[in-house]
Length: 201
Image (tube, rainbow, N blue to C red; front, side, top):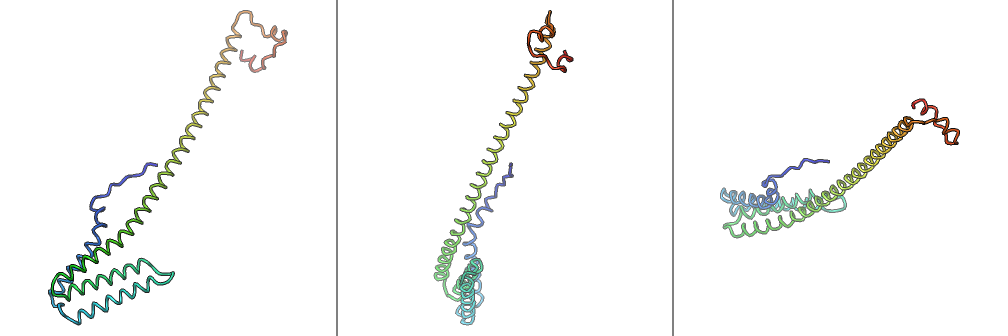
């Protein structure tokens, strides 16, 4: 019933929110490093990146086609295709405006896609919390009912014990009265006490 509550560190909470920007920024930085090391205006390098990006996009299209498509593989393939295209542009182009523009577009698209998954995850988490709360309330209600029932049984047993004690006290007191004669009570038509009770008296 009592569950351990773990407080997550603020870095653990912020890391998923920063992941798209970190990923696109890493690709941009690597592309510019590649540019500084000879990829600028290199048609061979540009052609290689175009082929790789097109291949990743084609793989994503095949992975998402049909009923048996896997959205995780398709999303990974499309993200790889976009990263390769961004790296190719960042490595091939002269200045920073075009790579920065593509970086901003890629970051916006990444956050748009991630926001959808974050909403789904938050919705699932909220539904799980509600379900857990309802189950806890149901269990607490059952426990309260059982506690009331057990209390009523205990009180009933106590009342029965108190009644038996009072009856025994009354019988002892009656037997101790002066002039008490059980035979005279029997002759008067009163019911006779059971033999066990007469022996005890």
